[in-house]
Amino acid sequence: MSDQQHAFSTRAIHAGQEFDPTTGAVVPPVYFTSTFVQDGVGNFRGGYEYARGGNPTRDSLQELLASLEGGTHAFAFASGLAGEDALLRAVLKPGDHVVMGNDVYGGSHRLVSRIFVPWGVSLSTVDMSDLDAVRRAMRPDSTHMLWVETPSNPLMKITDIAALAEIGHAAGALVVVDNTFASPYLQRPLEFGADVVTHSTTKYLGGHSDVLGGAVVVNNEELAEKIRFLQFAAGAVPGPMDSWLTIRGIKTLAVRVERHSSNAMAIAEALVGHPKLDAVYYPGLPDHPGHELAARQMRAFGGMISFAVKGGATPAKELAESMTLFQLAESLGGVESLVCYPSEMTHASVKGTALEVPDNIVRLSVGIEDVADLLDDVLGALDRL
Image 1 (cartoon, rainbow, N blue to C red):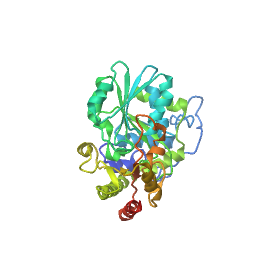
Image 2 (cartoon, rainbow, N blue to C red):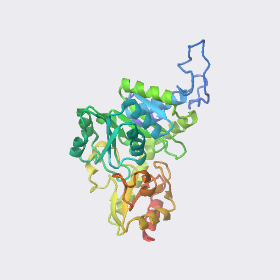
Image 3 (tube, rainbow, N blue to C red):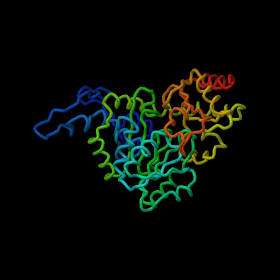
């Protein structure tokens, strides 16, 4: 039931999820097996040989992910970074150049700067909202990848995916969009000309803070074959239970993200002009620099908010540590609300670099609890500063 004529919410429930033909079970079984019996040497049943190479539960997840992003092939991994690593190795070789946004997820920057750069890849970071700066950063002879994250983490910058796709392709580069913050419900980068979409499926796709995973979605057969080989040969694959939990989370993605977005909008509006804040970063606010662009390329504005606390690091950390419903933890996109101090948590690995996050920034992952309770928690914590 992966037919693209069906609406997103329908595909989120049915793509790759045909009922079990043996029993009629509405929910397909989870295939807890490490190997598969062969009908003679080299004669595989359904193409399955060994679980690292393929598992029916993982295949169901991959079919679902491809459907939701509008790709031809999707590959599931044990984590978001495992997927990114496979993609980078599939595309790059020593001497190649990568251009990344200057406030991408710290783990993505760490992966390239501390593993691929010593291997011989060069890296430039640039403000992706400045198209002229991106053009200047491209090296037509060696830039093989343009890495985009929109909305960005944690400053919520919005990037024009279509414009960057044109810039990247003109330089001969593959255009990659990390779509973790938006999820395919809010934004589908392949429709705007991107070549690859990556996800930490741990976040909005899984949605319940109970499973780790990653995904890479592509539209190119040659690239798909390279990633498929690395998925098999390097083996950073999710287990069947991880795959099944992610599938279960995706079934409610649309309704969850609608609630995440409406709750975040209410909180962002309540924080605007607060005397203890210098700025609120949320693309749904009319004065956000990327508001109009976000309104064009996103269905809604998502559940992530960041804000700058007056007075610097001390009150910012105090605020993050004093909330109750917003629990102090890394990650995002779960049904429960989380608060994070990026400078020393998610982005600690980029302190002292051009990607360093200001030490007065606090990031909220707004959950789907009652919005009045969430407002009481945030505003009460601000009042106590």
